[in-house]
Length: 409
Image (cartoon, rainbow, N blue to C red; front, side, top):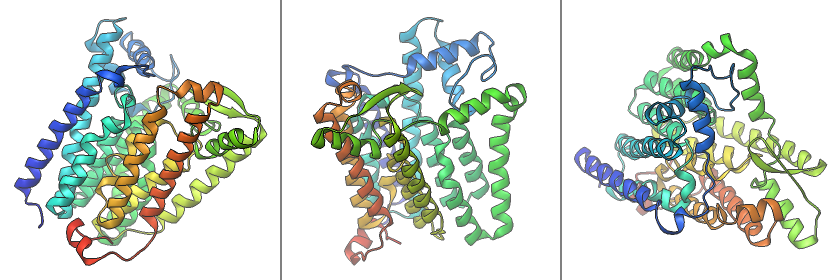
């Protein structure tokens, strides 16, 4: 039975409440131990802006301009130097973004005409994902671009194409990864509304991104260039798929590995990892291009291929930090049919596997190449690859599942 708007609203509000409960639970017990936090870095940026310093010109940062609001707001609210107050305010902001993700996911599913079962199942996974992934959710700002990305897809599903592209532009300006969805969104509008409307929508997105970047391009072009180059030039991070195979070789064959720290992460150094990083990036680009060529023509196809694009971007990237799974949590559970069910189950497994080694065993992995976290990283990365396969491979779906999950195209 298709969920009514009233049922959808009630379910989304209830799921938002569950999300907040999960958020509170993350502050207790084992979740609160041995955290690896990014908020001190964000606080440094926020305090600098509070003093009147201009980002990219007066201090360097690796994030795009759309991320700046979530740094400056906690700095303005809290006293300078009060780390606890900054972190509290930052976490409140992220909790609000998480609530927005849940509510927007409900709006998107309503636009898809999802059944009650599909609606409840998808919202349950999204609401509970903080407990599945762990404390990394609290101290990273990825729920901010995540909320903007879901909002953009919801607008597209509800035939508000220009609004959707504007929101997608904001998401790209907040963190570059939503750019992986732009070709799919463009194809979707092109097929449904024609070339002219697609080009108008693309212009809206470009204008939003330009407005976000232009002041800093004028004031500090070198700083903006440094920010982008820093992201593109990152070496093979120790948690990536290619690194996981090197770690397996270390455990099984005694392969010598060298660790180096840089770009805000721990990485594998040497010729082999450098070549592997290039090859993995080529595979990532090839997978994304293949996904973009699917040219979605229905809302269900748009959601499915958008989820697939993000999974490919994450699973096949030369950097695979634990917080990248936050990007996947709002989208993968929204996919319809048996493939969506399996993809959601696999994503849950990937999150749990991540929490088994991060943050408690991270330094054993990064500094000592310890066996247990090495195998857990490999298992997590392979599960993400299987998730991608589940999303992209065509296979027959039974009528019963079509009825339960609202179709699988």
